[in-house]
Image (cartoon, rainbow, N blue to C red; front, side, top):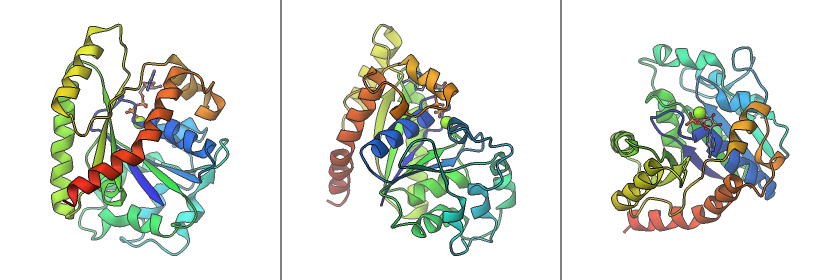
Length: 265
Ligand code: ADP
Ligand code: MG
């Protein structure tokens, strides 16, 4: 099982869209895929037509057992989606209360790792969608993941937010004694705007080793899709946005490998 987290401390940069697109494409290629919504806003959950305000079972249930995950619980919380081969572990808005409740409970940073260990043979890929705020949910995602995808919107000040994210990442990895490889993915790229072109050049200069060499373009199909509850398989796969995600998917294995070889000398 491969576990990828998609995170950035900034909202609206394409995290949820990346999870849906990559998850949908992997499922289309015949992989068994689980997408996990770790954002109290539940955008990923809504995308698949579930209401995070009223949903009865969600990822929240995993955190209700004093740091343990009862046998079989994870599988019970997973639901099918309209996309064949793609399953969802949904979020509920109750997740927003987690931070307050978890103070002083030990083992809370490893709940998602433990939950995924229970379903290790059931999926080929797990994609973790994250909230922008640094807290127990993001700590869980970073502890569970083998690779991190950091979408960065190509706009002015993109670098600032990214530096903050990488600083946070280092801090967490130090405390977890964990090294996580990552790939920075430029998103919402519009070649006609100065802001997009300049910030992409800047990213290339600042992060030559960890930046994906292409970018995800602005594609209005994605905006439409999030409202219609559609996945990429329901989209015209020839749109340039979906094509860019397919290219990213092809590049990721070599990116993750190169990175971990560097880390291990
Ligand atoms: P995040 O999860 O980081 O908050 P989202 O994936 O929800 O970001 O994207 C924010 C908004 O931008 C959504 O309305 C989404 O539909 C839109 N969006 C994301 N990626 C693209 C894209 N490549 N082209 C056009 N719109 C996009
Ligand atoms: Mg999101």
